[in-house]
Image (cartoon, rainbow, N blue to C red; front, side, top):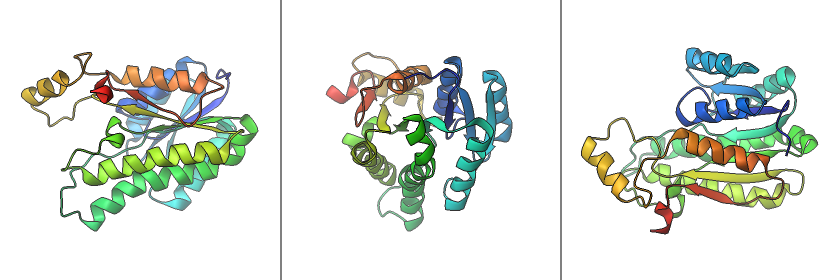
Length: 238
């Protein structure tokens, strides 16, 4: 798939993994829409670093805001060739789950990607584009009891990825990238970081660039859909 000169939207593109994905797509010559919810300075800085990019603000829990976002991106940069659903939250949600924690995770990780794909579908069809959902290696092993809502909603995003790959073929491909031990949480102690790495066959933390390069490879492909690529140093085979 040709990426140069085409348009990509990266949700959560102002920081962390989303930012690295936006930069990698920019390096491929794409026009990049850098989405943020409440990080205008970081989004603007990322757009400046890319060059052919613009920042866009939207609250992805608001259906009308999603429609507005896709409309503004399309008007400014053209129909999407690539949609990256990267925006995410990672907050504790131990049992007993609260309605707020459950609904917030489902809203960000499942409902927002569905609405974004729905809004962008006409342009993606014209461009024979691709959707890349950033999931999590935990989707197939929801084993974090303190983050139940996160695990379940990411598993839901994986199911959405595979379901829509069938529903939207052949015009639109839908794939997923599932990072594993990438960017340790800020509140991890040194011993927690060491323990996490010992469970990874490649014995190192992954980097945002590892994820971004996987995204670019899937975006370039013309014959991969419905697949979820684990970028986890081999942890999923243990």
